[in-house]
Image 1 (cartoon, rainbow, N blue to C red):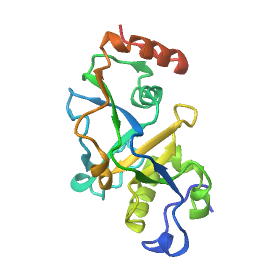
Image 2: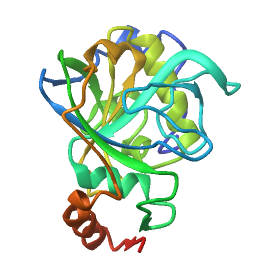
Image 3: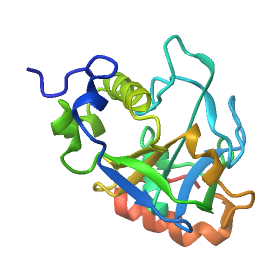
Image 4: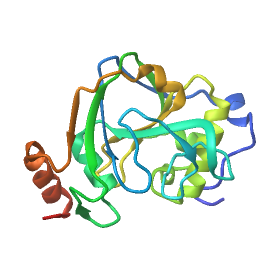
Length: 210
């Protein structure tokens, strides 16, 4: 059997395996970096209802890609994870291109996430490669998880770019947990983020856009 096979048939997961949940309490701060410019500008609290995207690991959108009722927001529990993930392709923290912003928002209700940091992936028939292996296969697992466990709000998983620090993929079911106003909200180019940007660059060996 391959170390990271595709997911089982519809209904099989829920029939034989309970979800192992990570509950994020009300008031937990979720951090994300998003783009206000470029080809696909978004708002800080906007779920992405277009997908699946080839570079996104846990999109639960159906194939073929296009606008859907399924939406997702990716985030992390610490600022540095956002920088590591968003700027991984160029390994440079680009502070102005496409106008990246950093937002932190407090959950206004608890969210129930399937915990992919422990042994559940192995029990389910996958492995920890779900967090770092083929993205198309991880997306297929996310689709199956979403359909077999209709009460979970998303996934809790280890960042492969930030030493397994916790990251989240929120499904549109978590929409009611998103506040109307953020806790923190600044452009990555804002001088107030200079120290965080420099710290992230040192942590990950990234460059910084002048």
